Length: 115
Image 1 (cartoon, one colour):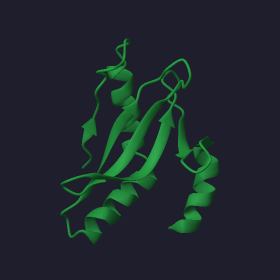
Image 2 (spheres, one colour; image 1 turned 90 degrees about the horizontal axis):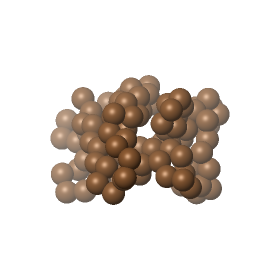
Image 3 (cartoon, one colour; image 1 turned 135 degrees about the vertical axis):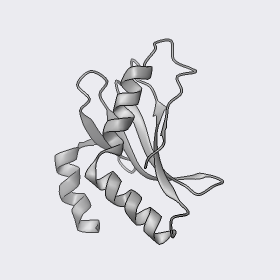
Image 4 (cartoon, one colour; image 1 turned 120 degrees about the vertical axis):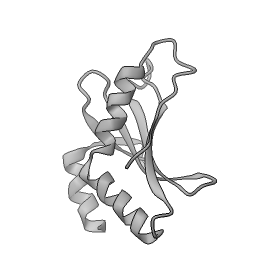
């Protein structure tokens, strides 16, 4: 089971309800569920994945950034980063190498090559 974490300490807008939904939608993605199962299996149940918002929407970036990370007890190791549009809840994979938001359909074609 995933832990859902959200904090809007720096935001002037109360995004808490939208952020919670964004995190829940990301946690329900089949790729995230499969990765969590893999993480639990490889760690013999000692580790799991958590999803949490790391950035609220701003004028420059109209997305929630939702990280999916492994909680190893002392730190978080990021497995995925997603961007979620707060009104439509459309989800994109965030490519850290290019800085691009990739539509899930396109990302899934490439992601399946690695699993």
